[in-house]
Structures are given as structure tokens and as C-alpha cells.
Image 1 (cartoon, helix red, strand yellow):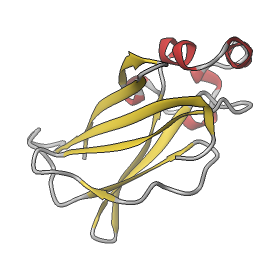
Image 2: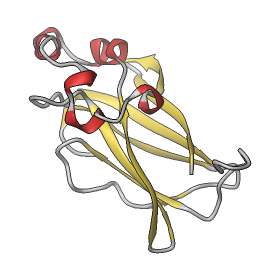
Image 3: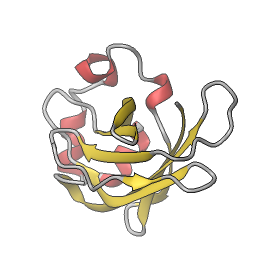
Amino acid sequence: MTEPASGVPLTVKLRLVSSNSGRPRTGCTVSLWHCGGHRSLSRQPVDAAGWVAFSGAFPGAHAGHWPHVHFAVHSDDDLLHAAQLALPQDACAEAYPPDERRRLGAMTIARDDCFTGGWALQIPSVTGDATRGLVATRTVGV
């Protein structure tokens, strides 16, 4: 991941499941990158239970964009799904020092062009703290 906010560790865990059956989606790879960054960490294969994890840093706040990461799901060379994960406000408050937190005051997910189609299904569950690191987890139907 590129462009970290404040050096707070962030692990993103995604579980891919079939949109039809709910069973783990295997045989796929996932790439992940920060808002504003165009370089992914690399493609990683999902495991037998459909899980994949990326370790990096919490993304920075960019003018006009709510803090988020992008991801893409591939099968061989075919793109199956692409989306974003909007990081919840409480996780942003935990990750950012006060000066960066003030920049968030003028932003909302609703005004971010990345989320014009809605964001309710693009918010992960986030656990942890800024000292030990945050973990964002989401199940994604593909």
C-alpha cells in the first residue's frame, strides 16, 4: 500500500464467497491499493476458505476523498470484481493524529465520487488500535 496516513499499521482481510451459494470462492487472486495510489501490493491468491490478507499502513486522507482502499478480484487474467473499502469514521479517528483528523471534518462518504452508488456494503469491520495496528475485515460476494 502507498501513501500511509501516520504510519499506523493496517491489515486488510477479505473473504471471497460465491454470490450464488455463499461458499468460499477459491482459484482467485486479489490486488489491493490505496486511494490515489496506482501500485498494488501484488496479487495474492485466496486460500481454501476464500481468505486473503494484505499488510501495510492506514491510508492518508486526500482532499475530496474519504479514506479508503481499492481492491480487484481476478480469475486468471479476467477481472471478476472491483470495489473499494471505505474505512469507518471511528477507525479514522483512531488512526489519524489531531491535525489529520481535522481534515476529515470537511469530508463525508456521501460526497465522495468513489461511493456514488452507495457505501453500506463497502465498509469493513475494523478492530485493533493505532499502536498495535488496525485490522479491516470484509466478506465479499463474487
